Length: 461
Image (cartoon, rainbow, N blue to C red; front, side, top):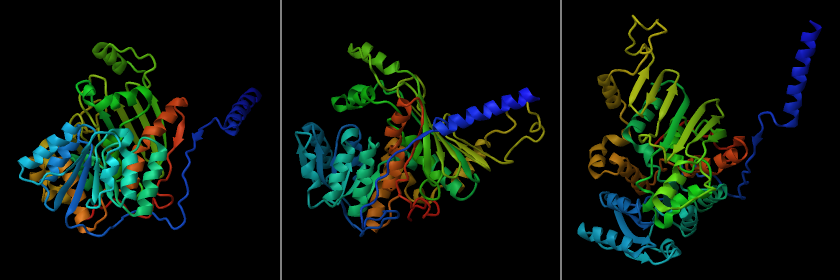
């Protein structure tokens, strides 16, 4: 008995020593700058209606031309300016406009600083940015200072300093700063979001998302090889928003809950260095980013999120997108389906713990009926047109349509600058975690105290 008591005392003493030394559950803190005097948040920001939205597009490589084409299908849009480093990219898009019987836009090209002339234009309301990742935040900040609303391709910012500069500039200028996260507008995600908001899944306590997409066919398409260079030089989940965005919306992040901290782990880099050696004859000994990065996030309300990134393994495309609720479950990849409490369970086998099919997805006809019943309101009037225009099956068009609709009607946008910050912050913060042996890293409250002021996510209608 005495030996047992001494053993227990020793264990408690060791635990106390570890805890007091700060090595137990240590969280790396991240600095949140204070707001300037007189500066306030932009939650539910409303601006004066813009009946005709005049747009300048900066970046016409892979994503930009499709965005311009989609905008030609939306009434009340004028395409004023086109900008790219490569002159032929600009001219091809202008030729497309001419072929549609539309006026040609002003052309800007020739160097990496030409965009400054575009943000300064007096006849532009919205700057649509689809350049390389590293220039996103720089262009957006200047555009807001020049009096423009901005829409930025993903990811909108790569560093914490850039994230805070976007937030502060939006708050100071009272201009919209929206990240162009198209995956929140996919039909399955929107329908599931409506199910969550109607209480069908109960309380969502866990979400999963990912960007798993082999980029081998596309690596050589990026201007100046900017995307491969970023993966060579940086570590972590460098492209998290497609997986994280829809999950954060379903979990009401900064609208009743907030992200608190994350932990990241990764594998060693094999696939991309091998690609460089086999396809380009380039040997890279110090490639930074691992093949697969996994991030776990904890929220203020005690819920969890799992996010994965992999752009090199021979896996089918997947954004995962799973929501686990207290009354139901939603899953998009590899098979779309819903499981609901008590729904279509075979009672004869439900009590048999060895039957792994006892609780499964609802039958397909039930799923179809559910998706029709819970179709999101913002989709009902534009679903067919979205599918006709296209853009990743229509979700890109819904994204652009909603952006223009809200600007035209002076409504808050579906996504604000704090969504941008929360979804992009995984890029720098996962690198910090990985470089510190998968340490916990604090996720700042980008709203600086206002995260609980809104009662859930509500799209303006």
